[in-house]
Length: 153
Image (tube, rainbow, N blue to C red; front, side):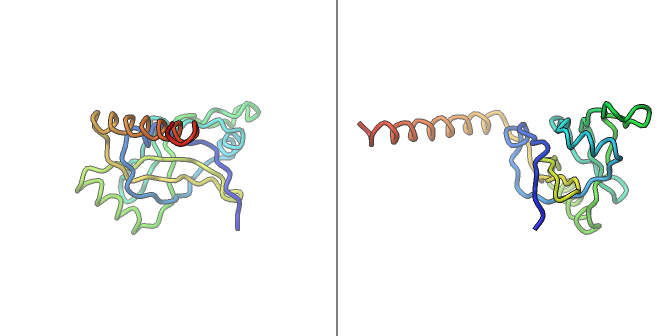
């Protein structure tokens, strides 16, 4: 079994969206991008997946230039092609067009020597949803504190 080593997590994603389904995709990268990923110089916030012409592209992801790559360096915010099966792209495209979903990257990681992206099929949260999540989190914290203090003193 290959080892999973996390490069970057999109922490904003679960706060801003209801993630309903996830899937794994490969990523087409150049050498300097892979080396930058090994250093952990990746930012997934404000990135999304664009579906065009039967292909999927990761848009808005920032992979910092690799300092030792001199003139052969990559463009930090270029669109990167995602490696998915045609039926997966078709399923994603139908949900995005029909029901108003969006596809966002949740995390980027190494699976063996390959860079993979975990994609989430998500719907945007409304302000009241975010507030209820915060309320629930605070209530859970209070219950944990009460339990730790000594069984509801």
